[in-house]
Every structure is written in C-alpha cells, then in structure tokens.
View 1: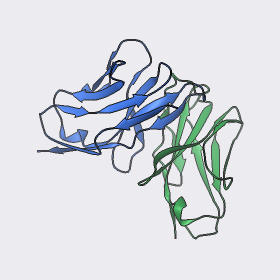
View 2: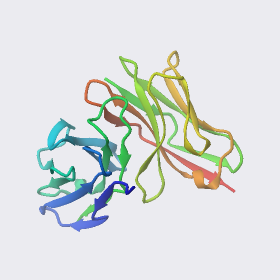
View 3: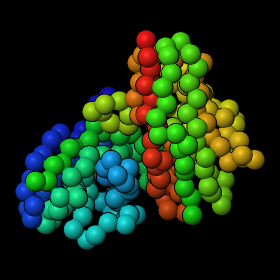
View 4: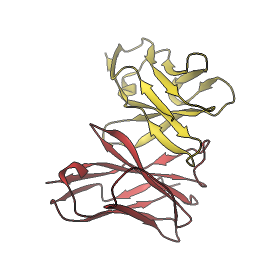
Length: 115
Length: 114
C-alpha cells in the first residue's frame, strides 16, 4: 500500500511568487492535514480537509490556502512568498475526519526555499 | 489550552544504554498523546499513542511510554539504544475540541554514540 506522496520534494522560489504543493493521501484515506516545519517555530498546523471541506485552520495569514479534490488529493497554495515561508511542508492523511484518537500518516514533505 | 513541553532539546547516549526522552503535557481534559520520530530528510513516523486505555503504551522498535496523570508526563523510553535510533523525536497532543488538531513539542534530537 503506497504511503502519503508529496510533490515536489524540493522547490526554490523567489520572493513575491506563488507556489502550489501537492499531497496524495493513502488510498482510502479521506482526511488531509498540512503542517509547516521550521527550525524556529517547529511544527505548526496549517489546515485540515475532509471530503473537500476545510474543517480546521491554523493561525496563518490568508496567503496560505488549500483545497481538496473529490479523489482526496489536496493542494496547498502560498501566494506572495516571503523569505520566512521557507520551510518543510508536511502533509498527513487519516482514514476519517481527525479526532483525538486518529492516527495520522505523514509524507516526506516538500522543502520550500524562498530566495 | 493544550500544550506539550519536551524538556531536553538534545539527548546523547551510547549504543546499548537506555534512552529517556522527557515530555510534559498541559491539558484541561483527558489528552490523547503521541510520540513521532523523524529521521533526516524523512517524514514523521508514529512510534506510539496513548488514548486513555492502558497507561503503559508499547510502540514500535522497542519504544514505550508511560502516561502519568499526577505528573502530567508522557516520557518515552527504550531499554537499549541502537545506532538507527538517532533521529528527532516529537511529543504530540491532540486537541480534543479542534477536531484532533495535533500540537507538537519542539522536538528532542537523539544522538547515539558507538
């Protein structure tokens, strides 16, 4: 069974540009969550999607957005990139909507560097 | 508000000696707690989880953790470290009233010396 797949693995973008990251969850999983990992802030929750609906959102500016498609694949978009957006972006999938007992499976992440 | 604090940013042990990674949590309600491991340039892998069943939780690769409510702790242990255990470890709490959103500790980097 394939795991969570994130593409691309590495990205280099220039300040002011926008970027789209993709996440394909484990087959049969319908929930996708996104996290940002930086050395200074650690791992922070961005948002969660279940059945194409955003269920939860973290404390990030509106430049960060996402969506989920009918096949459960998810994309996140960051517009007007800033240097501080350089991070490892991790996607996690789970079978159903996240609850306190849900086990999340993580992808290897997309390393975004903004120059 | 719920939170986790990992008490050590870096732990170094010799191969074959015990591992102890410390985590304290703060929660107004009975928490769900997890330990994840991240190897360099890899994603996060679930080691074990506590969800109000047995207080001693056994995970993969010989790791276990004990939930102690009186001490608000969820420390991760392993009797004998292996070189392949070198990685970053995260203690995580699930936010009960926010659909299971995960809150991560700052991480503990484990080094294993030969």
